[in-house]
Length: 195
Image 1 (cartoon, rainbow, N blue to C red):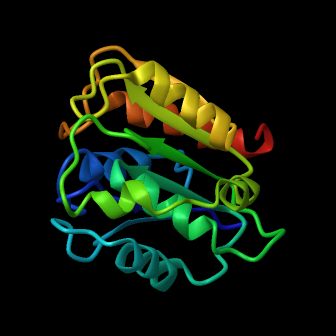
Image 2: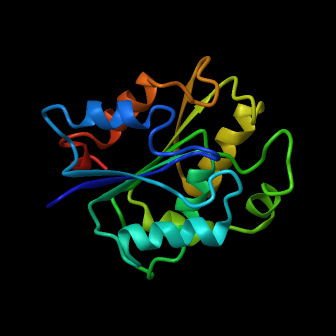
């Protein structure tokens, strides 16, 4: 079965920023874990909207993605992926998601962020759509300093496996080995049988 990785970038990101090009290059080296890798160019990245980003995901992968789809979200991209997954038909699942620097609360808010914090997510539907949910956090994220509470929320709401990287900040570097290692160890070749 063909496996695909779909990446939703961070707030104010683009497919050619942060670690996304480096990750794409690394994942294409043999043995390749994915048959296709798509870093989506999400609309209005400086002022993302829930409807705009969920629609972009739906346009990219369809209203019902292949069961062998793995999502990788970064920051607000994690929120967009969860909200998209909550729209899937009951009983439909995807292989999973790696959610990097995901959050439900932040230290400081701004106007365009407020809808993402205030609009509820159907966690039950999102959780049911994921065969595996892995969250990668750091212990010094400048946007969510209480990483222990953030970890607990991911565990409670999504049943996620949380991996905390010391000193990872918001994972905005051109190379992020922790992202690659976590993706390969949880979703690499052969790992889908362990999910």
